[in-house]
Structures are given as C-alpha cells and as structure tokens.
Image (cartoon, rainbow, N blue to C red; front, side):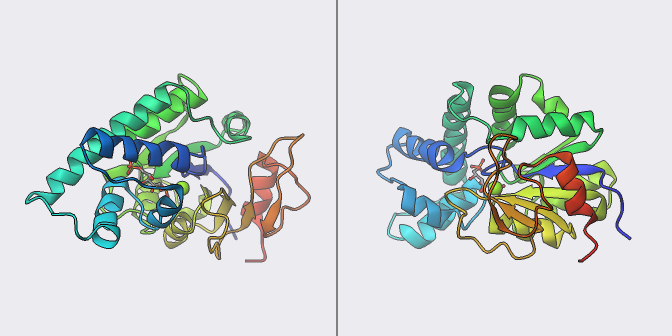
Length: 258
Ligand code: XBP
Ligand code: MG
C-alpha cells in the first residue's frame, strides 16, 4: 500500500515559472556581451542546449559541440565560472525587476498546499540565488519560508537527470519517496524524480518541452490551470478534475493501478 501524501517537491525552471527562453537565455547572452564575446544563443539553439542542465555545464557543452574552434583559455573552469557568475547577476537583476511571472495556478496551488498542511520543497539544478530572487519577486516577499527545503544548483555534483537532488531533498525532510509527489516540466526532470524512486510525478509542459518524452509521469498537462482556466490533458488521467488542486494530487498519489 502506498504511504500517505506528505510532501510536494517542485522543480523551478519551466515548472514554477517560464524562465528559460526570456530569462536564462537572455541572461546568458548579456553575460557573453558583457565579457566581449560575440556568442549569441538563439531561441532555437537554446532549445538544443537545454538537453544539458546547469548553466556552467551548458556553456561547456556549447563550446564542445557548437563552438569547438573557440580558443580555450588555460583555466577553462575559471573562465566558465566567471562567465556564469555574470549570467547569474544579469538573471537575478531581471527577476528583481519583476520580469518573470509565476505560471498560471502556481500561487493558488502553493497556498492550498500550505493550508492543507502539506510539506513543501524545491529540487532544481538552477543556482540558489536564482531561486531566492524568483520566489521573492514573483511569488511573495516571504515565499522562501514556505519551503522547508530548497535543494538547488551545486548542492549535489550530479545534476538532473541524475536523482541526487531529489534524494538530497527527501533526506533533508526525512521522508521516503512514496510520501512525495514531484512537479516537473522536462524529460530530464522526470528522469531525475523517477530514478529517486518517486512514483507520483505531475508534468506541466511548456514551449521548450512540449515534445519531450514523459514516460514514467503520472499525468501530463499543459498548465496547473485555474477554476476558470482548465488545463489540457496530454497523457494520463485527471480523474474528472480540470485544474490542479489538492484533491487531484491525492487521486494521482493514491492511484492503485501502478
Ligand atoms: C533548469 C536548468 C538550469 C537553468 C540555468 O533545469 O537547466 O540550468 O537553465 O540555471 P531544471 P543556472 O528545471 O530541470 O532544474 O545557470 O543557474 O545553472
Ligand atoms: Mg525544469
């Protein structure tokens, strides 16, 4: 028998907010410009680069596969780290200007979860400063305190699709995987949660992840939705619900046909 649902673990980028195309991508390009590089990550190229999670890892992947002729500095790690620190500055500045809103239904769902006494955590590959800035400026000034654990960035060495970030978050909470439900938006994210033995996985897709392979996810929808803005089901069964609320999450977690 499945354990009771006790905690919700959220991915950030693409799940809580649509951060990639008009947020991270733009910040990378600004960092390149600030550093005097003529690199430009287009919307299409960035979609391909998203195969690799983590900003530093993504820059390295870009050099290896899309710009192999760029003369490598002796201290490549230091070069990438500095470039990435500049990207984080640009990105958090954009967030502090309120440029990136939460996705539809996110705030309502988090408030309902808090009222229902569910424990909340974050498991993301993005830099901790990015999470703080997003929660503070796009959700609520005190939103960081809504989450018991914020597992982010280099806290673990192996980023998604490795399970490490989910395992770390659950260990911090002292919870087994079958007491948790994960929220993701991408193939890499679903893989990570699944390898951490989490069975209940709710996916909300976005422009970059529409065509991802989500096998292993419990339910795939296009957004959390609101009472007057129903989600569309892409795969799985919403058990008669048309926006994500705690009652729907309970049915997803309790499904006995798995
Ligand atoms: C998100 C990411 C992140 C951001 C950039 O993946 O891949 O790397 O694109 O963040 P997920 P940093 O949603 O699966 O966690 O530049 O701070 O690494
Ligand atoms: Mg994501």
